[in-house]
Length: 493
Image (cartoon, rainbow, N blue to C red):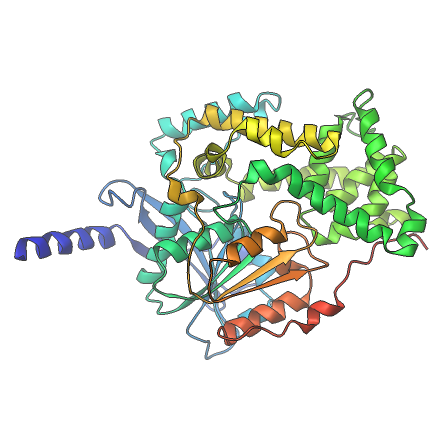
């Protein structure tokens, strides 16, 4: 018995010896509106690369704490889990600085393993060196990262969840609230499954549950969100009159792009129908784009590619374009800077492959994806099939192992959970939130009719509801504010 206890104690000591919080200077560019040491502080979280072998290599995760604005904060901070997978949390600091949740609670941003300001960062610049050979870029990136001494197969949700659990322990936190967005909800669900001990509440915003099949459902989810735009415009007499037959004109224009791609005059780039659909899909993540979307689709149908792209990319609103309050050349230069920023700071593509390939992609196959897309508009069917094929090809090049079956199973939990969904979300539809909530016995589900991906950004309503839930997790938050929410599509005056 003493021998067994000795082994257990040794293993526990070894594990915690590899987990450490160290003070760290905050990145200067993130402190423009904060006073380091007074209103915010940063740390490095040191964790094992492999939680099954904690004595071996370690990783460094970046942590930034925004201190509550009160002198007597509540003891249960909010930990934000960014999406992606591979997204950086610290780079989202501006969304949290003035949020009312910070009035009474600390907000903690953690760059997950392989992302952001942590070490290593699994970025893949190889993907952008030859945009026509995604497969080779993925293969070259994996080879470089592996040659540099990284076991990329360990950058997954299960290891990630252990990291967050370790932070909660070594930070001495007795109770925490998790807020996950997109992939961050999948990570939150994994934490609920694997390390739930200190979780007080969980908020799932734009839910990506493990039992969902992203590639199989990608086409249907995009088509549903696009149909919602056409439906809501048609039921609004002013929108319908301003943009008549919008759906038909949009798909007719895409049909013609098969024969003659559109050329952007400033950059001389050509855009195919798949390019247009990809830009549209990404743009529909933002609720601020949704209100301008009928205007943008109408412009596209008239061969005005400039207006379509700058609106859908979020660089200008329909009103800006309609009133002439913009300059196309400046906007295109701004777009370039945005993409450079995303490449430099926000997304770690290696983490995306290392997580998505084993945990989602390899539980599906291309034959079933094609079958799932058979009922879609032919143009959307082709786009969804091509998107899936590119991902299957990249995952084979990445040489990821197949994940364990547990990573495709619904999470069962009785932790109080608030589930938020946006009606216009093109990638994590409301139905996925409902699907996750079915096995969460103390969950509340709400759909926001004006929101897309990332509900808390859409209005004050979800912010107030989440705050009420944090304060009283055993009670359904007052949802009357949802009744007044609607999308107001822009129409020229």
